[in-house]
Length: 71
Image (tube, rainbow, N blue to C red; front, side, top):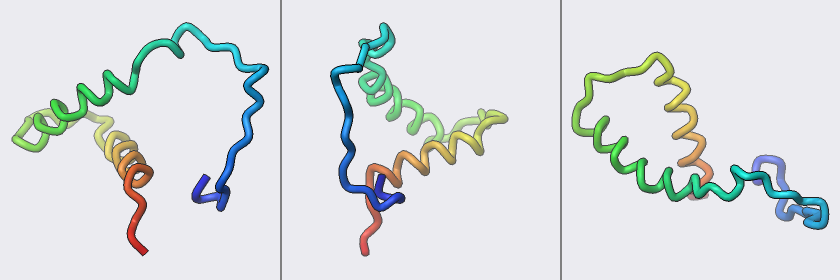
């Protein structure tokens, strides 16, 4: 939204139907797992997977969305 210059989003909740996977707490799993993965790579790991560049892109995007740069 920020990149598009938008400040609001309107959602028609009357048509929303939750899917079974919507009830899974993925963010909690992510929060629990992220420090372990970070420590594994920060303190030395011989593992560099062939998808590491894509992983860096995802993490970069996540960080940039969480922490807006100072102006």
